[in-house]
Image (cartoon, rainbow, N blue to C red; front, side):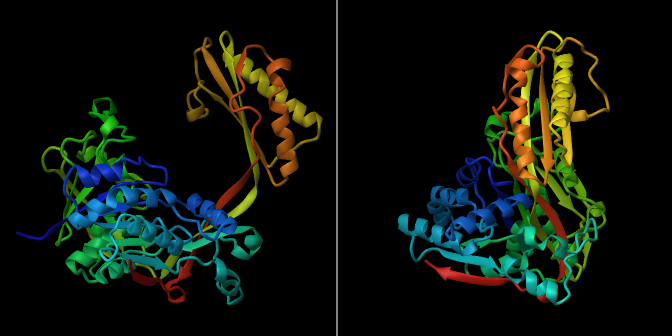
Amino acid sequence: MAKKIRIANGQGFWGDWLEAPIQLTERGLIDYLTLDYLAEVTMSIMQKQRSRDPRIGYATDFVTTVERVLSRCVDQNIRIVANAGGVNPDACRVAVATVVNKLGLNGRVKIGVVSGDDLMGSLDELISNGVPLKNMETGDELATIRSQVQSANVYFGAAPIAEALNRGANIVITGRSTDTGLALGPMIHEFGWSLSDWNRLSAGTIAGHIIECGAQTTGGNCQVDWQSIPNLAEIGYPIIEAEDDGSFVVTKHEGTGGRVNVAGVKEQLLYEMGDPTNYITPDCIADFTSIQLNQDGTNRVRVSGIKGRAPTDSFKVSISYEAGFKAIGMLIYSWPDALAKAKAADGVLRQRLKNIGLTFDAIETQFVGANSLHGGLAGTSDPDLAEVVLRVGVRSGKRGDVDRFTKEIAPLALNGPPTVSGLGSGRPKVEEIIAYWPALIPKSLVEPTVEVFNT
C-alpha cells in the first residue's frame, strides 16, 4: 500500500479555538499537527511587544497548547509545525523548552527553529543598496515611509521546514512563513519530493491552503446550507490524508461535528485565491483550475490532478507601518423611529465637529441594523426597526483631533435625539493605525536559517 500521512491543522489564526489541537491529538490518529497563528497585523503587534520586552513577540497561546498536547504527541510520534515564532522565534523556542523540561520530556524532543525572515535590522542597508521594496499596489518606494515602519518580514516557504524535519525536529517553530508551507514541509520531508517537482509541490501547497483556516473547511463560516451543518459546538478541524503522488483527501476525525464536502472545500479554495492560474508561493506557482474534487465518502473529499510550475525569483515581504490614528464611537437608538434618530444624531455630530474646526482624513458612518454590511446596495425599507446602532469612525494623522472627536460622541446621549439606550463601549479609545505594505525582494538577498536544538 502506498505511504500516506495525516496532517491536521488546529489553529487558523492567533485567537482560534483553544480546544481544537487537543481534539485533533485525542480523537484519532494523525502524524503532524500544524498551527497557523500569523496574519499581517499580527506581526506588527508582536513587534511592538518585543520592543517593550525582548522575551516576547511570539504567539504565547502556542506555549500553553504545547503543554497540553506534547506528552501525547511524543508518545504517538506526532510532530508539531507552527509559525508561532512571530518576530521572536528563539524566545518562543526557549519558552517551549521550558515546557519540555516541566513535562519531564528532556532528551525526547528536538526543537527546530526557522528564522532569518525579519528584515527590520537590514532595511536601511537594503534601501541604500538600491532595493526599493516598492509597494506592490501603489508603486511607492519604502523610503517614503521608512521612519513609520513597525515590522518587515519575508514569507519563507516549505523548504526550511522540511530541512528542520530532516534533521530530526519533533517541533518546528518558524517566524513569518507561508500558511501553505506548514503542511507542504512535512510532505516534502516524508515523501522525499524534489524541490523542482512543481506538480507535487503545487498539490501540497493547495492541501495547505485548504486546511490553513482551520474549521473554515469543515463547516465553520460556511455559506452552503449552513443550517444543516451538524454540531458546530464540537466542530472537527481539518485533516489532510496525503499520498506520495500528490493526491490527498480532506477529512476530519470521526465523531466530531461539522461537515466536509465538495461545496465546503470549494469555498475555502476561493479564500485569498486571486488569479486561479497563478497562485504564487515561494515554493511553486499552483494552478487552481487544474484541481479535481470528488466526494470520497462521508466527510471525505478527494483532491487530485493538480498542476503547477516554477516559482518566481522573489520573496514577498510583509511590512507594517504607522499610518495615523483612529477612533470609533457607538450609540444605540431604540424604537420608535430608531433609524431616523440615528441619522439625525450623525448630522448633529458632524456639524459640531465642523463648528470647532475639526477635519479628518476620513469620517465614516454606519447604521448597524439598517443594512450597514451591504452599504448602499439595498437599504432597509423597514421604518419601524426596534433598534439601530450609530457607529462613527474617524481617521487622522493628528492624535489630538481624533481625541477631541472621542469627547463629542457621549454628550449626544443627553443633548441629541432621544432614546439612547447605551453608549456602546463608552468614550471611544484613540488607537494607532497600522497599515500594510506588501513588497518583493530578490531571493538572492535573503537566506533562511535553520537550527535544531536538543532539549
